[in-house]
Image (cartoon, rainbow, N blue to C red; front, top):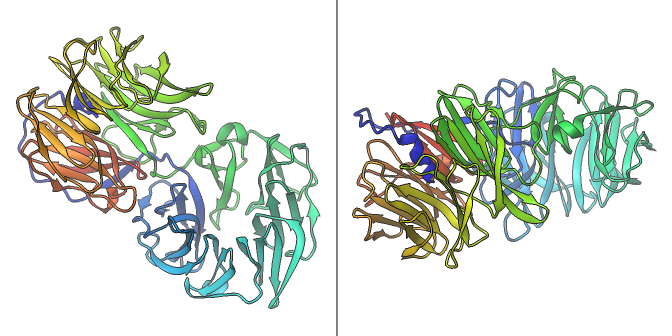
Length: 598
């Protein structure tokens, strides 16, 4: 993205040691996910469902696991007695088959432990390492995640499995089933999710209410409270014995098993709950997986954002001492050099839609961001400005479309270009981003990147590479085919590199281009340049692992792999520090990774 050029305006050639081979995940903690706790270790499976994050210091720092083989996860469990033993339930793409993955190295890597004809919806550990998996065929049993077999008589259409003392309580076919003393029994209690504390079991169903049993599922009673809505968004019991219910009327807590209730501000703070978990030695300090991420709370009214560094990063920029990451849920900022995975967030609970920051640009203490949202049912771009390094923002303009590109003109400081897709137009501002004029051009199919040089602009569009020398009043197609990014060398504007789907096109005279074919079998995404002229190119895989980052030391004529397993899911944004010593990669599901260039 051309905004990355603004971070390398200080062109100071330097001779230093060769690049490091290590990537460090530096945050932001911008993703939530399913929770598992074992002793003092926390595991989170983000919603993308393709890797597990682990923390050994109660969420202050996280280690990112490798991508899963051939599946997406939907639930996880950790063995309380062997905290490095982790199971993930999920499904394989395309065929509807299910899988249980097993890790014995604390979630760093996984192997297939069980394959089933249908999706595995849940996994759980019991005593002595006994493991369970819920699927359409019934409930499978294993030991330590191995040696699986279908439990005789187990109910079909199993959704959730929970070990309660010596018994097994299962939500299957929309109701509760219990395995006690080797015999299965079914009830008419509605259930799609189950939670327990001691002998107390709470079952909930979205359209069936909340029910409680104080005797491990022998008898049940309906839970009622000060709500009138029938849809149950969340219902369960926490490690400290609180019954929690969330409906369209709000979030409610009972410390006496439903006799009295207290309304909280949880909906306003973190939106809809998905799951609650706790460290075994800290039952009163609970973690909540909600729509806004993962939060820690002691009262469900005051929350501390935990999250994991698994955000989908779309854009990066540097302004002064601030580095800013635009994600699918807003933007985050922190001071350089980055010392913590916890960054400042631009809001407390982002909406589920309308907060994707697709573009960032910074110059002379001004930061602009393009936020993709909706006005009614129409796609809209909200341009917002920050004068304090991304700590606070004010809306300056709104226009139709979505955006992935925002760039300052290198000659006229007040001129700003804003790319758009979903419409055949882009936008130009002459007052530093306070207002914009639309430039409509029929051939445009969707602009991914705009690059500006002293002579004009280059547009990387889904319909080709275009050139304008009159601020976009007129356009000329230079290359056909889909283009994902374009970059102009700030040292020599005649050196232009255009990025296609799998090929790179290079020009050294600003007019004619030479194709470097088959640079990658994955989709190429974004390109950045270091002060010494070395190029870095991002790639994205939609089916497996990608090369992550490629590198060129000859102006783009040839490329070598510069990625690694930490960025193998894919890279959406690249940024080289002004001193040329650090490369930042905004990844698809791993937040921002940092790599030393020497």
